Image (cartoon, rainbow, N blue to C red; front, top):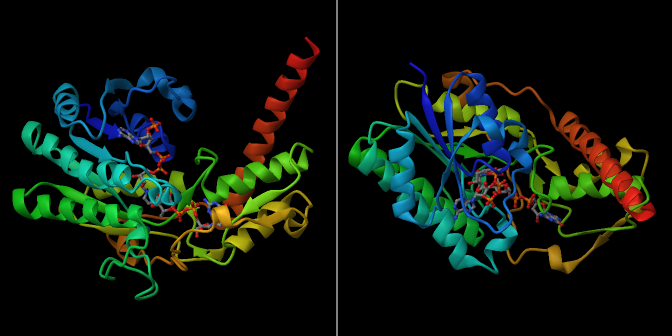
Length: 331
Ligand code: NDP
Ligand code: GDR
């Protein structure tokens, strides 16, 4: 029997890689998309026709009930969120509504319509926030440092609660930062690799950045979505940390990205208070021993390879956009 999966946040970075993975495995993939005046399918354009699209919004329970009814899923992956930490200070209530409370909407929709469906919640290393213990593992206490982090803690515990209250197969994946050429442009890796491409091609002169000292455990999104799927294939629902176990500063990210195209980041980077956060998460380093042992999950792409891959893709894209703009100017 062909399995059916419902993915929220399918137009985002992780949703697009997960949809690819599930389509390759022969799943029927349903994607929840919210209405926007100008729809953006950039990340899923290559598989758009293979996805069964359902309209809905995470903040609207009725639409989620309809979505679960229409897709009748074996597995539900709840990836939708207001996912940009920096935006969660100027928009704390919106972040709370989408990233926290709406997890309950999704769980309720599943509980009411298809309680046997397996449920994945996209939890985050941002829940650890202030350093209590390193490396951080499933048992490390949470101390979030942003409205986003606080919201994810709610999403995490309500998922655990539905598992314990209603015996639902609900798992929470505590994923550390993961990146790719499909990463949103405001996140630090993509902001840097896009700027490196533009500076190299003479289209940008400087790069304005915030805190260069924070340490992150950066992996490749394509590897991380495999862990999401693996969690839902186990006999028992559990929570897992997914990480590389290696950390780098933002400064190292700059060094690797700029030196790859023969440039020195110090010639271009300007510190701008606009990008410094009201409260910072200084250090994230994950211990994914449990995932490796129980899920058999493995990493394929390392830090340097990831940054180089992103720079290569941005060079290709920016070159193509520039050629197009030149063509438009001459016509
Ligand atoms: P993205 O920001 O790339 O994608 C977010 C997705 O959520 C988009 O498809 C967006 O739709 C959708 N969305 C936002 N609000 C709503 C809403 N109200 N109703 C329906 N859909 C909505 O995130 P990522 O792919 O990077 O991350 C996926 C999930 O994993 C998120 O929950 C994130 O918080 C979490 N996470 C991410 C990590 C990372 O390093 N990437 C690490 C740990 C957790 P639209 O296209 O319309 O904006
Ligand atoms: P993060 O990712 O907040 O860890 O959340 P982001 O890439 O935004 O920031 C990483 C670190 O870089 C520092 N930084 C800057 N960040 C941005 N965006 N822009 C800058 O100019 C800049 N300068 C320095 C930040 O201060 C921070 O320390 C991501 C998101 O995907 C979340 O959804 C997810 O839950 C966590 O990762 C795990």
